[in-house]
Image 1 (tube, rainbow, N blue to C red):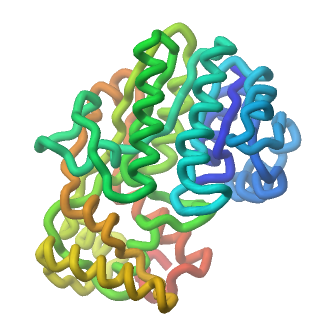
Image 2 (tube, rainbow, N blue to C red):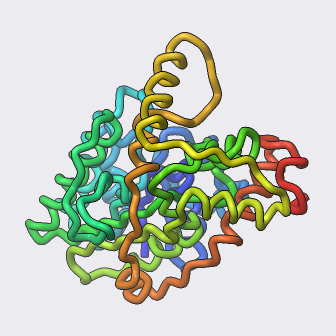
Length: 337
């Protein structure tokens, strides 16, 4: 199947290109910067394959360019998103760009139309377990608000009968991340400075398993679908214990009540506006940290034929890669060296 892929230079998108290619699909890369795409995909061993990929140089905010790219495919995987201000703002990409891709794909008859969302659209949750039927959240930050707006539009298309598949990954972890996100930055900070032990936890899923799930979605004629893939739910103590296990070291831990952690993060947000401090804790990240609950993934795993790799493997591979890329000293990953 000819699959148009947006976000191929991102963490999920790049791994998805590798999974699509391995499954026998023909990726058509809709990217702003072809050279960046070559570099990112090269780290995944796709150096030789890259010359065989069809490349469409386009920004998802450009409706005409997106439409021209979509016209070359049979299906689309939309994984492009902004997580910080840039390239015209969050809404321009996360809402306007999403509408350009999903809406025009529906008009052109592409099937399936796969959209990568996030479990964060359900957080803070209203129950002890998140399902695809859980209520959408009302986030405080701009990123969360744009993701909710995009989510509502994707669901509108589903209600109209368009073959839109929405996939909700948890916190994606693993090797070969083009730009470190808050999860990998958090691993680095935890190993260096210690682990804040607070309520809540983390929905941890290997990015390679998410990519396999996205490739498995590429079946036409299935109609609207929603797949939750939060992965393993780990409390912050369990995450610290897991890192101790794979490194053979004992990391520092310090217990922090949720209210104190929220206040410290809000103060840190203010300080960061004045001084450059490299620590991933933010007020919005804390809200996810202290309110996350397990996700109901069984129907996704069964329906797509996916088996999650052990969380130990995911963490070990991520830490080795962080060491290899110079993000953390070898001494901090212990026996993984």
